[in-house]
Length: 282
Length: 298
Image 1 (cartoon, rainbow over the protein chains, first blue to last red):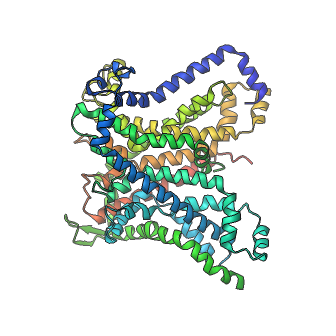
Image 2 (cartoon, rainbow over the protein chains, first blue to last red):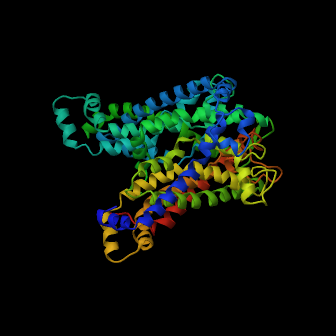
Image 3 (spheres, chains in turn orange, blue):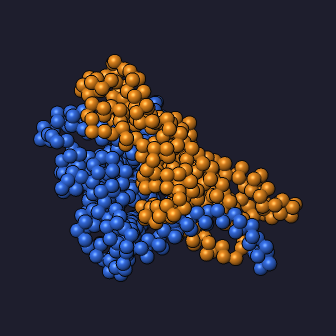
């Protein structure tokens, strides 16, 4: 807010108080589900359903979390999710940078056609591809495997276009001068182009990681064994018919969400950059 | 000309990894689904015969698809407008230089850290009549709403799913709109202020038009999410409660555990291609409809 307008607004002390009251109220409403979940997860069975006392931070215990960890085999699920997400993130960065370089710096026959091919994939939702991809993975013998979870996600048009946008801002002369000095494409890529788009790559990495971590439909389509289950589809195992054990589910969600909370707090700036990359200027 | 061909091998080498993955796992499924959509298979899914193009029309007009489409539209009509209004409201509310505003922004963004599965499980427990907190709260506020709980009552099951979904998307909407608000030139507000425009007039005459492209983008994303709703249905209601199945969405009709077409790769493909077409039409309509009212700032 510009200084003068801000000043005018702040002279009305009552309005400022009103805004704070509203902010606090909305913050409580938004945080309520998280807070209630955390409290239930930190209580023993009977305490977690004794409302409204369940909301108070009393009689806290880690027993429920421990039980959820053991019963749900959450360690294994987290390691699977982490492994798949990290490999996919690295893969997407590599494929995106390479493809973006070809589109931004190289001139070759068929470039327009390939560009249109990439563009067309943007329109296809995952919900359409799962039917056929399930068959492809099955015929490759990749049902219940890490390859099945990883390989189909290793390239995205979104990533390619995001990086290409940054590459296009590099003056063509720079590449030509480098070429005259005998600098090859891969050296130019590593020493000039990639360092230039480091912030964008940070956002792309964060986004790919989150997107992979949060996958639900795809893992549930090709994973049926316990060995390769990811955390998103594995949590459901805690959801038994037993009402007294529902706080195990809350404990599981807390454990599943915790790594992402930590990642997001560490990479807040990349998150905002990534989320807004698609939104700015339509 | 010579130079173009000289760069050809390098370019193809760089594009090959992406092009192969996208070709095998995105473009091929698209084309192959359209072909498979002709097929009609028996219960075991092993023997299929050609049903012809007419199968697309038949499936689209079938009661099951229409019912699922109706439910999905209902979900979108709840989540998109409410999600947008809340997102814009929170972003405008927090768009001030006040002490501690960073804390509130973090709180409002926080739901971005929950996946659909995590958010759904949080609400699943909160909404259970035997143990959940929300029924406890709702009973106090609206005594009419009694057992068997919001998720098991056919009238409230979909609104309950929408509640979870709106909450899960709130962080995303808030962050995107906050970033767009910060891009609005302050002089616009100053001149509106000088012209004597009050807070509400400034909001409708400056803020909303300048947010146009972002609102368009966000509404397309939220609509797409509603039309792809699968995890929240699988975890919250399983498409139920039976027999009305008011939360059976199109994605759940195709991929759900008790899906009618579970073993019929032909009908599954037909439905998936129809879902894709519905999404295409929707995106097109949204861009056409909103584009006229959108200001792309210079």
